[in-house]
Length: 238
Image (cartoon, rainbow, N blue to C red; front, top):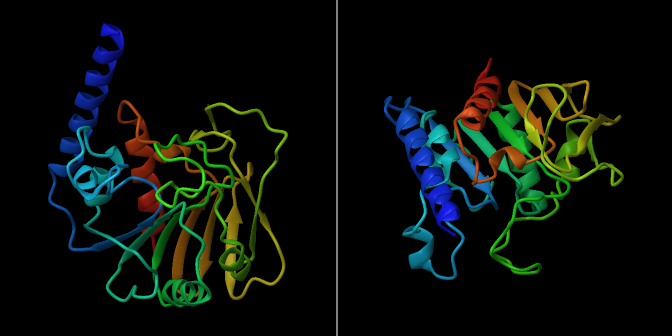
């Protein structure tokens, strides 16, 4: 018991240290939109008080995102005019109007980092079917098809956290991207292991990752923060 408490305290201290390291530098004059079902901005809790005043340290990814600009949590993708960099992480299913808005924003020169996990392994305090639970399966086929991509999942792969063969990202029951015909003015380069697709869509740039294990809140140490930083910088490249 004492050992578990000590480890929990250590994890909180490391998370706070990582938050301070990424928060020490002034954020660029940029708006970062975050559209996600994962508990990155808000803690998993039964009530509003628990969401805004969690007992644990803030999610480590918040500091990384805040180092790129002012982070705003989005409930919808219908109003992206003021967003410079958009992070979409395991989103709820998009309505047709959101697919159109996201595609138009990206083609006009937007920068997108998108995590779409076909089998989310992150633990949740909420039961299956609870609307507060993170999206277990990413259902984004229409927008991916618009960009000439299909998200696939091999249910024969072994479970458990491991490193991806390409860029060493932590993955667990990851998906893969496959190029399909029908993409509209989109050019995607898919990594050899299929985990990451980097796309030029119109005048915009998108980096897509077929797994969300990188964003698990229990990460200890700064390696995941560095990996997320690298993905963000890739998405922002011209």
